[in-house]
Length: 215
Image (tube, rainbow, N blue to C red; front, side, top):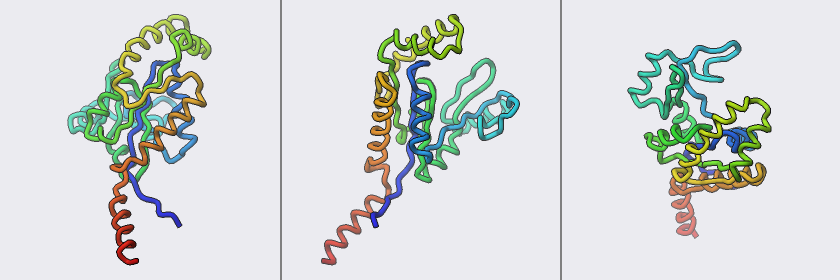
């Protein structure tokens, strides 16, 4: 029977302007491999009806959240309309040591903070680009969820977001969601096979050499 080597989990960051397909690709990736852990953010806002701590968010007080920032236990964080949001380090480290990958659906600012964190060496970052700006606007309007004012705001923000594409390890131009998904899984599978992510590989090769010596 083939031997399965253990490996360290990686931190997979997906970023894109709104409408480029990031969230769709994230959902497809987690359906493709249910072992992938989606990063649950912490927040200081109050839970809404039906929300549970640890499922939608880790709900924390402002004091607790600031302590996590001060002690380096928050991989990334931002303040939005008076509340803090961020990614706690402990669940990510636990998943990584168990060989599970963690998926982050975050913007370029959060991605930058995680790449600069103590876990940065285990980050694989991917930026999703639209095939054109006209197509990006068409996709936003096709959702039929937002007003013209909100769409205009998202389009204005997208230019700044796209300007950070060169900070990422990989870039996928999302002409077609199925083709982009195939590219995404190819990246993930290649990154999982990197030598430094397989701590048992040295022992495996030593055993191969022992087999040579025993012949």
